[in-house]
Length: 126
Image: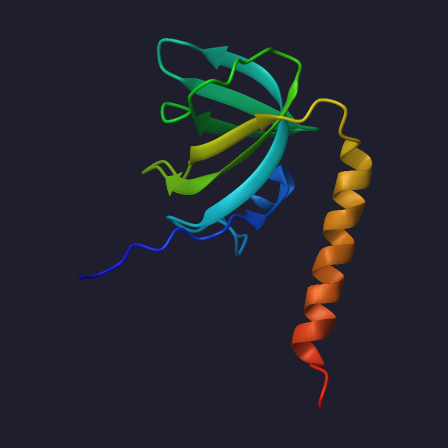
């Protein structure tokens, strides 16, 4: 029997989600943060923003999460790329992260990537 593995969401910023990005792949498991700009109860579609960058998030599988425009949310899910090359995150986890310092969040993401790059290019020898 084949097991379905749920992958952890790769930490990305909305700025990373453009068609030429290595993170912009069908089915990629991602973790993103953004401010809720719009939410529709009828379609369960949220629109989050970070600066000038926008992402639609399908929240149909989320329970017990109330949405407030202007609040900051973190979502983990899979990226679904539409025929028009628009990405929509199919969220499996979501939470309100109001109070997060988005500038510090972006700085820590850059440091994490730098560490991962250094570690992968120069692994420690034992």
